Amino acid sequence: MEDALLQIRDLHTTFYTRDGLVRAVDGVSIEIAAGESVGIVGESGCGKSMTAMSLMGLLKKPGKVDGGTILFNGQDLTAMGPKERRKLMGNRISMIFQEPMTSLNPVTTVGRQVREALLLHNKEMSRTQARDRVIQVFQLVGIPDAAKRYHEYPHQLSGGLRQRVMIAMAMVCDPGLLIADEPTTALDVTIEAQILHLMKQLQEEKGTAVMMITHNLGVVAQFCTRLYVMYAGKVMESGTVREIFKNVCHPYTEGLMRSVPDMESKERLYNIRGMVPSMLHLPKGCRFCPRCQYSMAKCFEQEPGLYEPSPGHLVRCFLFEPEKGEESHEQK
Ligand code: SF4
Image (tube, rainbow, N blue to C red; front, side):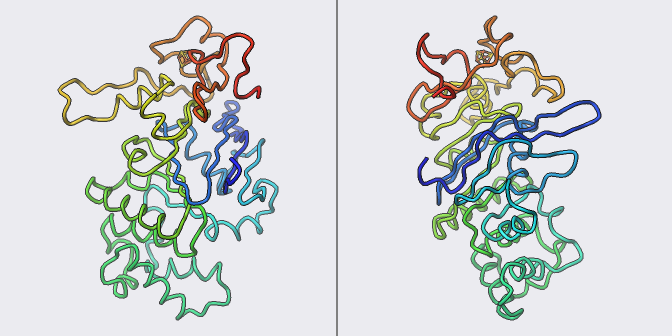
């Protein structure tokens, strides 16, 4: 992608535990253009959040990025020192976390928390200017009585308002890239719809690129234009949302799609058999083979490459292996 704002190339994140190496992110490549909204989908434990944490530089020991590059606006984040990287985080790259109650400081008013985030990256701004800007952003994200709410503590706000505060905190410095890690998981469906609508509006108005991490393909269909499906630390399928929804290829993506509830259908809701494997004991061959209804003998022996059944649509599955003599996407 020529106009990529973010280019993650062959990223490897490993946890060095007493029980062995956990390769939480195992050769992941993701690209996001400026202003684009991209979904990262998969069940819990597939490496979605670890990819985001590696990008944000928020990994804690024994986790470590030990391979690959993360280019943001052409600058390699993995080669930056902690000080230089901190300047970029929260300013040019922001993140909305899953649970606003645990991400906000319970003993500081929400206005002050957002103001501090703003002042950290805008040293020349006065406190009064920062307060006015925060109230303005509170209004922008639909917090009613913004000036009054500014002085309230997180426990005085509803879950939906707390998540709006988190969005305000992420947007206050006008970032180029917003990472939203399951931003609506803790909310009920009505508030979820409002928050997604708000994020879409902000993204369109400000031209912010969004990486939407979710297990919910419904959210991706509403919000994103491209999609990466992750399983056991690897990208299994990627392409435009339109193409993947029209022509789903990977058996895992197919299972995720069939697991989306359909209110019209009288059939029992599908669930993918089995569980995500322990990253300490990955199966030999294709990581999805113990759960795959199409598995063949070869799947239990060899890892599939990344194949391209149609332009821009990549699939890690032997069912889409090109004829002998043709190259896989990784060989090109
Ligand atoms: Fe299923 Fe084999 Fe494809 Fe893996 S490579 S997803 S086991 S068919």
